[in-house]
Length: 337
Image 1 (cartoon, rainbow, N blue to C red):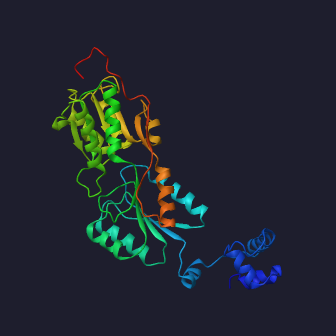
Image 2: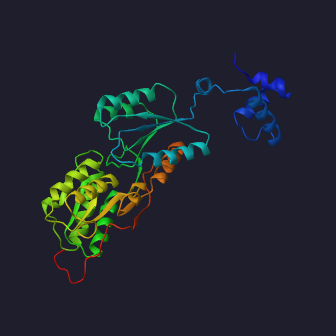
Image 3: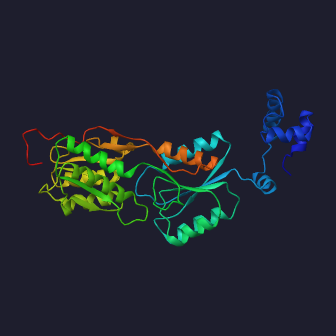
């Protein structure tokens, strides 16, 4: 039989009630000295708190379920780090569930697994739920929040970057460098999460401000993956119908970079690239990739904080341009770009 609160009370000489208050961290009912004695005894005796039993008695859970998909990008670890930091600060626990690669059954399995146990809430990382699974989540009557994607549905709260601003800022940056034929590659404009559509609209708006109408072949859609970058570069071809490209993720950017090398095109001499995300991947290739850098850690931290505090509003986190070596300024006398 495991060590009980009674065992710790006997070891320390304190009452069972006092030991229980210390182990439940009910601040204000005991001194720091008492807490130190009780906690030392708990460690010495090998006490392990039965959290499941506690949750059943109190009808309160300290568990946050984090649902992730098989993302084609690489920023989930930073988001999870932010979530875990806030969880640690507030004595919450985190479980992670896998929702597959936009797979209906995997999503439903992750949701039902989460909902079978007491939870304080659910965070969904870049998960675009099928309609039936979304209804399952809504019907559960449990707090939830999306991270890194945004929606028009007012019932779906989120913490994300302003994707319209991302598309606009990246395009304005290239325009200021003298580029006029600017591509946009690897974005998904079909998903119900309107990340790609917002970035596309921001891109088009910036071009329109400069009286530029994008040609159809400037925009190459995709799923934010490395392979989408390879395919986009193949479609752009060696004829250089664009002078610069905004890529939907760092992986898309690396795909373009590698395919350009196979086509004997030099980055940035023949083609400039700016990626969206700004993860460590930008720094491990040559040339290093200029990026619109998102604050994924902050997304996770705020997502957990708002879930814990039952904050109902949406939030955008900060973005910035990180200049590296993949964008070249067009000479002032060059009117072809």
